[in-house]
Length: 332
Length: 72
Image (cartoon, rainbow over all chains, first blue to last red; front, side, top):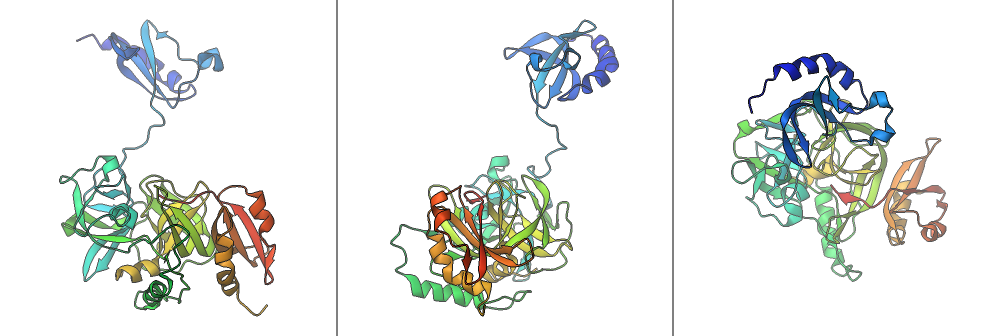
């Protein structure tokens, strides 16, 4: 095992710039070559590549030679190498934009901190922190989320405090319990008191305004009031057509877009055949992927505009922050 | 045109959403800055597209294939 590193090191030192200049190569170092899953005893130059390409598709000068000055080489597909995954790791204090989740889900994004009864609470989606309504108040919220390795109790950062229930669409025989439910929702929607003006919203039975939940940190020192790559939130703003927005999320990081549609009514798939209809939503272009749910959406002045919760390959759907604040009884 | 696009959209929305493949109805901007009603489809749907009106009470209706929307 204790082979002399000096010779391969010297070779690597001479060859590394040439190797890194070749297509797909992102790193070169010294290690043990692996052949058919078995580690070989000789030290080799290991070239990490974004992806493996058959030699036939590469010109001879672009190929990694089987050996350099007598030192064997190995090619390992690592994909692109990024800076340490801050967003999917455990972070304390945790800012907005990092992985979070109820113990029964995969992972979503910690949106930002808001105030509830004079104390800071974590804002994200119901389907991230309350398991789409299956969670119970007091359930542990993990940072990072379970998919990113978060475990109970070591990574518990908060406990579920409140969520707005999601009304899922049932079969075609729904519209019976109509009136009463719609009246209640409209009453909620009309309540003023958050920082933004709230227009009355026409809602029908079984429709939703938000996919939102809050969780109280176990210790206030475990959370950070800023958002990764965005910073502090100075206030709230109303989402209007054409507004430039950005978000900071667990999966795709900082992305920007534009509000392309307002007053959107949209059917959203929640897995297992469950569909929920949302109304008065904001719609932006492709600025999110799975795991970005719960991201705070802000305008160019970093004012809070909405809560990201759904999308397709081409589309991102955002709850209006005024409905989120009203539904949960929170403020900035 | 006495009614606002929001009012027109609100009135027709349920009927539009009931058509096969319609996943969203919203208000967007047209190329000339006018407001249009935007109908989102889960995939290209010739039959549904044939049933969609070109305008609703004077407001243009634009169809976009936006795919199935999933909670993420």
